[in-house]
Image 1 (spheres, rainbow, N blue to C red):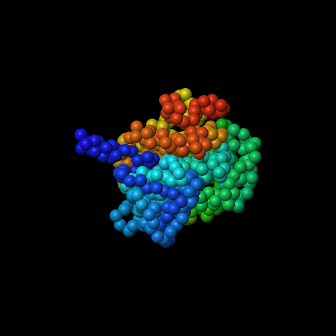
Image 2: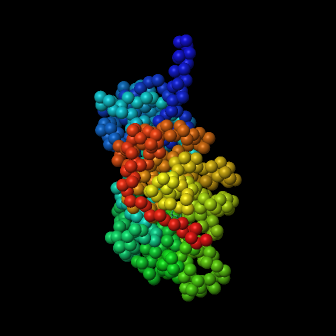
Length: 542
Ligand code: TNX
């Protein structure tokens, strides 16, 4: 009987779920407890772990009001950071916990940071009692499945500002997401200061999707640098998007001399591909962008040009270009434009990123990453892979976080009756996508995109992001064979409590089943205005 009990309890321990999102490769529960308090010392090698150590100190102080000091000595309660030269893969880490010592080991500082994030998740989910946090010990060995774990925010349609962006970066770090794609220009507003062309923000920054007369809102170059630094402290790379040749309305209001006109529904939508001056103008803009962003990648957009390029059919300079180059249709003009701009980026030693419309062009596959967004066009993804492009997967279904989550929700974009429930984000990518023929590493990773036509308040943003961002993180980090939705849901429960204490207006997927446990978002939601019922532009076109 005794033996059975012992066996059962050991089995019970092994079965216990480590409360981490994303789920690590391996986690074995230990029987010991590590008490973290103000006497706990941080032991770190010099010159290789400062950022991770500093992050641990500031986060523990912020969330638990405990200040940890660095000490060269190992004490009876130590957290030790070690860079190891062999045995751990580049993007992997080990987190080894025992009664007196927590060790984080990795091959580089970025991976040490990822191990620190895991430790912080354990710390934040453990209550503080008598000024001590009694951490259950785990031995964890972990590594990322995808290298690109991205989130895109559109701040042209609505502008949210530095405070909210920093908050997003905090949560991205919490979930080991590492690429912040910043959509800074589009029809309603141009949001990045360009010194050579001040009217881009002074005029182009005026208005947003709901109010064309809203006072100018934009990021100065100092603001941009501040955000980049904040992200870099969390090992997040910031990638700017300057959308062209379509979605250029705001820029064209500021500098009409470079406008290529639009269509009745999308006036002044494009830059003019027929004028040589346009290429100089946009190259000058990209040079400033390149100097600001250390990522050495710029996203050129290149999406949905056909929405508003009707004017090209009659514009004298575009017509001349078509005649000179013997172009047969406007798609060839579009390809020519994007190839010219890619040449400019190449001179700046930048990688070219673009939405999946660029698959048709002759861009160098070596230097270009295609963002596959049209989930209803799997053939475009296949073609991108066949041609040899690198790809980031961000299909509308299920990775557009502006889409409503189910039929009863009022917040989000209501798009042709399609929803993006939590489970669909969790189940991405499907085996059909995983099994597509490709070279190793051709798929760089996955990304969720938050377009903000329907997002006017931070509450609406929270509701659309949380907890779908947690599902995104696990889809990006954890190998598909290791994912399991019911386990994820269990681990998610205590994360919802963190959302609540952070004051987020999150969606509770367990409501009403567990409503007593959490705040009641369904009721709160009724107090918010309905978001706009956006029509599907593409559908209308057909
Ligand atoms: C499509 S995705 C767009 C965006 C819209 C979004 C709304 C893409 C490359 N273009 O301009 O904001 O749908 O869901």
